Length: 215
Image (cartoon, rainbow, N blue to C red; front, side):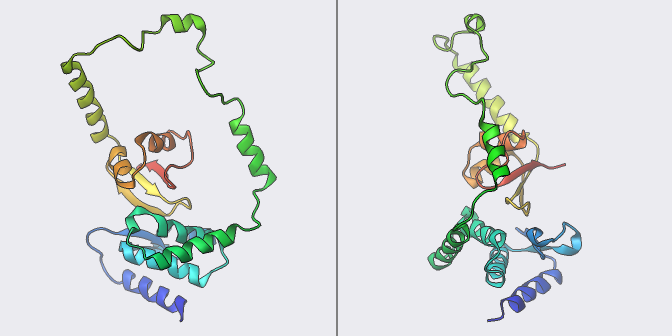
């Protein structure tokens, strides 16, 4: 089967239409293969077409680790929970085979170890005993139902009025735009705090995705 021909047909069809409703942006030439973010290298696809394109790219380049990883992500994401067991199995085997014999570079290991140094579990060592005495008690204080409701509404308002965020895969391929952190967290089924840590640049990814504020 000519997978390249099928891939080209999907791309050409998408370039000659105006897609309505839900759509996803796809890099015609993957970024991991030198593709750019120029409009000429971007095309709008349906969710199904987007998945098929990554499947076809894996069939075209079966030995490219980054292409394999992208195919695996598309197969395992909740938005594609209708993926057949056969396709999921193919993606899982491809990912497993690509990792055989793969070792992280010494530089990568040293960076990871350096980032972990100094991190301690348990109470914050930076809070002195004197400061602990000045902190308000954690237990014993009771809040009225009115106060609880105000706090709940304040949190809901903070989520609803939050900045628009954009979801990318680990190779910076655009996936979707979300109106708030809470909306994205609920749909992707990960914690709000995880996405917030990425937005605050405390960690690189959450839930297998990269998150950024819309500029």
